[in-house]
Amino acid sequence: MNIIHNIILYLPFFVSLYWAVLLLLNKRNNNRPQNIWMVCMFVLSACSFVWIMILGGIENYKLYYKLDIVDITLTLTIFPLLYLYFWALNTKDTLTWRQYAWFLPGLILGGISAILYLCMGEEQSVEYIQTVIENQDTYQFTPGTLQWLLYVVSLQIFSVVFAIQIIIVLFLSTLNVIRYKKGIQNFFSNLEGKSIENNRAVLIGLFVFLVIALSATFLWGVSHEAYYSAKYIAMGLTGVCIFYMGHHVYNTKFILQHIAEGELSMEEYEPLEKEDEGTHLNRVLVRFNQLIDEKQFFLRPTLTLDDIAVELHSNRTYISRIINEEFHSNFYEFISRKRVEFAKELMMKNPQLPQEQVATMSGFVHASTFSRTFKNQTGLTFSQWKKR
Image 1 (cartoon, rainbow, N blue to C red):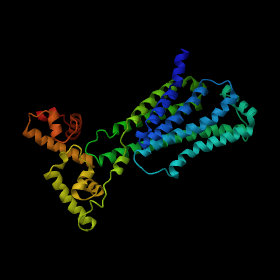
Image 2 (cartoon, one colour):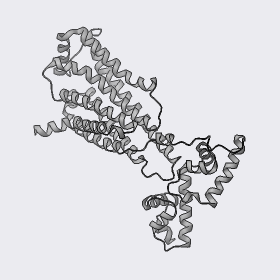
Image 3 (cartoon, rainbow, N blue to C red):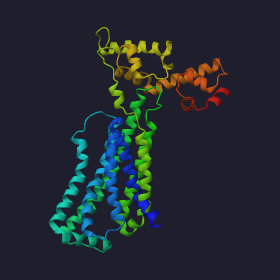
Image 4 (tube, rainbow, N blue to C red):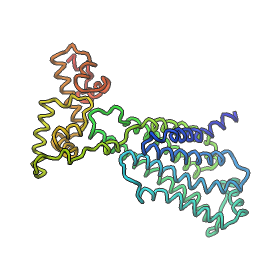
């Protein structure tokens, strides 16, 4: 039984270390979010090792107070790294002081704790740790003393900062995933292989991870005994959650930076004649409608916004603006709607065609994508629509 308990306790450590090493070995092929995740996994593996030693019980209190400093610093570093992972999905910008500022709470609280331990000396530090662990429900410290200051910084302020970090990271990560999806939909007509599902899965994993973290923080505040009793459940769920997120991060091969890197040179595709923006937009709109309705450009399975920009001697900003303002949709929705309309006309003329053939002829890469899109737009499945 002890072996099983130890495996559960060590699960987050081994899982996070596994993904960190795997991404390190594959560093040349990693994108920036994956490199950030690699750093996060190394920090998490070190942090989880400290958790193991603390939860497993330490009789050497001289070691415990030193681990307490490491725990405070590293734990408050994990969620800033998780935020940077989702942030990097949408931009190729370099880190600024705003991103680096996320790491200040961990450094400040860890630094203050280290100074207070240093000021107390080893004997008082050991006494403080022993009091906190062995008299969890009864200990009290005299206000204004070093022990009281350390208790306020390392437990009370730490718990508040930790909870605030969790809530903010969850909110911003959700916004970044939504932004990523919108960016993809504004550029591609087919979303296969664009890692949208992977990012959604990582975000779901983050939700679970944050719930576990908040629950652990809550239990510590309510009852230390309950906190230690739930350690196997918390560590086991954390290990599974890290593996789930790491799997999807490893398979995230596409980021919005790839779109920016492939942006067309507007010097090559600028208008042939100098004209004001309104005139240019009107001219592009007329040619855009001809390209879509007459030439049926939307039937190209791998059609992108840049393909249309090249054809119209314009740029992606103008084309996207036309679609958003004139047709009140993004690029993906607009092209999907055109493809479904074409598919319905095709089935009216050739009702004997199978679904796979209709999907291919309508510009869809996969029949499953066609089936899902068709139902979303018509409210009916392919078979139901044919019967009607």
